[in-house]
Image 1 (spheres, helix red, strand yellow):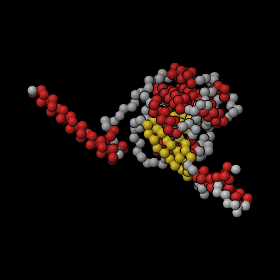
Image 2: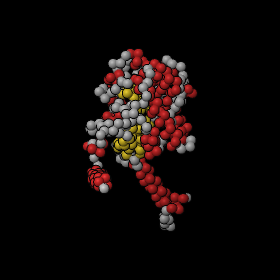
Image 3: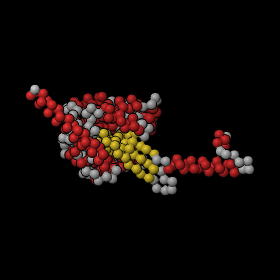
Length: 345
């Protein structure tokens, strides 16, 4: 009745005419909803210099030469499905440059876009096993803190139920896991260097990453920008998180530590890994005992003057900066002359 009341009633109209109007209006509304853009957010963070920017550029089909990410960078991709009334899909992509002093920066993507369509890619440098857990622990602590701070009441538990569906309600390890409320894919980068490391080191790294991915309800893949098949898998994974296509980027699982790992959501188990049920704290302690970890590197080293970097050009801002620099030089020179004059007196 509310819809009838909101329409102008023509007394000459029959019930059939009114019904046709209502159906037509409903179809128009459905059409508008179908063509409205949907958004997802992918947050890429992890080890410094592991290839995060390169992966993002390939995902977005950009030919830009990667430059060091100074703090937090935002970009986006847009994809339109085929067919009449096609839906526009937008993927917000955030990249964190450095883990040092980054707690407030980690909050930004969640605060900006919320958690409902949020996912994260954690990239770790496999070629530096002595920093691997330090970096991973910093990321997980930051994500946990940001999630707890910006989640709506009851939202985390509601989203964890979706994680349960992702890994399987009948999974035998379900009651032993520390599930995250949103999809996480751990990407082990620089596999081309890592594959030449000592076999025992690779075993420890493999066991650690499989264990932590399993307890978080995450997927795990190895990656190298120099390997076409691994690059395609990583790009398909980003497309899956960002646009939902392909629906399953993990065509086959690979568990052998002597080859690149590919472990989809829910495909692993404590029995398959060969360890007793554990949690993130014990996993980190065990790995740090086997491979002592270096402290978090303060890698947020800026170039001599980022404003002079061609990659950061902004004409209007640069002109204002130049004007302010000239004003500052004038003030400094004036101050210097006054000081010299006062000293003479």
